[in-house]
Amino acid sequence: MEVPAPVEQRVMRKVSLRLMPFLILCYLIAYIDRTNIGFAALTMNADIGLSSAAFGLGGSLFFVAYVLFEVPSNLAQQRFGARRWIARIMISWGLVGLAMAFMAGSASFYILRFLLGAAEAGFFPGAVLFITQWFPRSYRASMVAFFMVAIPLSNVLGSPLAALLLSLDGMAGLAGWQWLFIVESIPAIGLGLIALAVLSDGPAQATWLNTEERDWLVHKLAAEKQDITEAHGSIIPMLKSKQVWLLTLIYCGSSATSNALSLWQPQIIKSFGLSIWEAALLNMIPFGIAALFMLYWGRRADRNGERIWATALPLFLTSASLFATLLTGSLAITMIMLSLALLGNYAIKGPFWALSAETLPPSIAAAGLAAINALAHLGTAGAIAAVGKIHEVTDSYPLSLVPLGLMTLLGAVVTISLRRVTRGSLE
Image 1 (cartoon, rainbow, N blue to C red):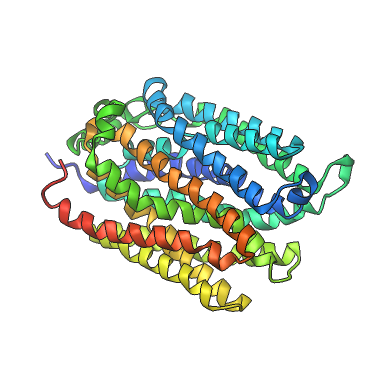
Image 2: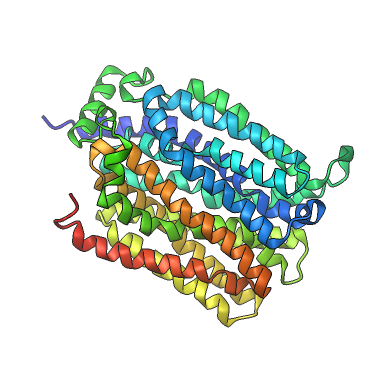
């Protein structure tokens, strides 16, 4: 018997208000802690003797650890429950972030960036899996986009905060970049402790829903074959899945672009002769535009049920905009191209992850979502290292963005091909 609409509306409102603001706040802090190195580099690199290539290599090591630990982390979440595992992730990355304030050279930079990647591994795919275990299909692209708006917002909010903390240089004998790591790492530890009280492992354990509401949500999710009890897969079937590898190719360029620009864009903007504060304020603009469009595009993808073109078209825009930076030496035009690149890049997040959750068989969903994100970060690691090396050799930021343009173009082409194979052959 069909459940009356008011019950669905009441349940989804309760679940959204209970879970989404907290998850977004957690991811916001996670991304600030991941990308604050981009602003720290404006003064830190000279202090501890990092070249562009060394900075790029250290940035890439975060993602090497991410790849190594992400799938095991997501499977551990299935065993220990989202509440405890997400809390563990946040507390550990906060502690490593604090340690980064005491780096003294390239070796410690490499080690701590690797450890930060290991600590944070599993948070994003674990959160996406968590969303699929709470929200029916028709809500997922919007909810994932809503969740992932924390990524561009982390740069909108983190840019002026970073400039402010860098201005504390010399206070209590610490450099500004040291204050940056200390102040921005503490919230992760506190939120990790709060997660133990706020989160529930699944709808069946949600004491804040009444019996009717719990029953409706559990039965709705089970009917869509996305129930948590079906999502225990092993790594080997996941690695044999054609879906996983195609989806990884699609996401590789998007992941590389968002992470590379988060790390390098402050330096790109400052290279036009701007101050740290001017670079910080301009850095907010592309990410702010991307955040607003991301929410619109995710809702649009849910309204019309479109996943393929909602992913492919923004990737084409991102690729074209990155290549266009080669044609200009103007700060204004460069900012327009970077804004369009990030607008397209973040627009795909909601429809892409909804597509992934809906494409993967339930038996490999937990490992598959983690694997897509983890394997895509292999490309991210390589791209970030390449940006640093190309810039060191050519002294040109536009040339260093070419690998990102090529990767997003490949992702767009593979997305369109996925439209054909999903009609009958992805088994």
